[in-house]
Length: 160
Image (cartoon, rainbow, N blue to C red; front, top):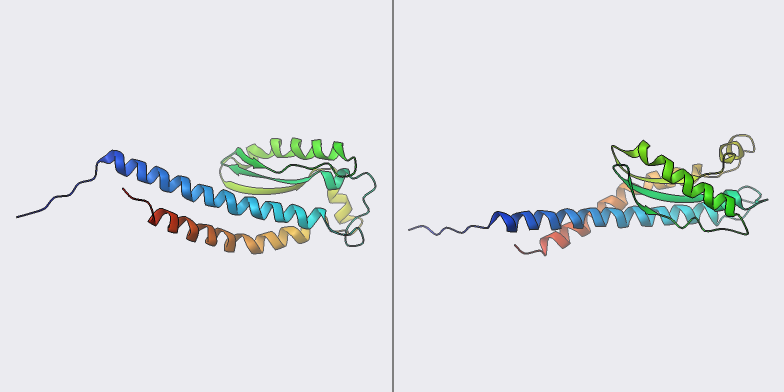
């Protein structure tokens, strides 16, 4: 005597699709939180710790985007700081242009979009993105590991 139990292929397909959505959602959440924290670390520094903010455009150009194989999924607000509307526009423009550079990966990209940002770091020896880049690189694996653990719990709660 044998007992046969089968699961329809459509149920398996639905399960795997839902599991994939959960994993992707948790990764998005982890990267978005890391992106928001990175933007705050850069923008909210006292000027004595960073650069003198003459026009507010550099601070307004700081933001992030998350790409899913070249498709922008999430973008920060590029909040206008003290009238720095040009900086905000440059930030949005830069993340739109970067999509093709991330066509083969899942990526969080934090930008300081004003064309002089690198000069402020190099010539004036002021920290624009560098310390935050190092911090975020040290954080990302732990964040993704927590996202994976959360996704596994949610997937384990699914039923076929």
